Length: 173
Image (cartoon, rainbow, N blue to C red):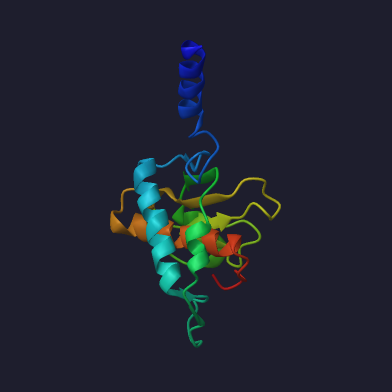
């Protein structure tokens, strides 16, 4: 009888972590040269920023900022199988042919698929509820080892993933 109780208790202890909490599922499908722990730090920083204030049009120029108060619901959003991966930079010749913009290689830009509202960007997000089954963040591969620039890009896209999960209008993000 004691043996059964010990086996039962051991089983409960081992299984108690399964399926409970935000860390139980695979958080990132990490194709970067950075660790999952580094990505988690950036995710937490994104949550911290959004809990204090939300800028709905941070990249817009010549328009008034659309600032909203922080949203504490951000702390309830966790990444679930979020693909984070580099994408080859658009070659400068291709960028020039398409836009007339001259940039040296690597350009730091990638082709941004629909539903992006621009053709080229340093990074972009795909959301699970669009035509894509899996949420994803792609960034220009040349940013991978660009120190804090990589962090800023990925943290911004994490903010976008969080805001989208909470139902915000992502049109100008």
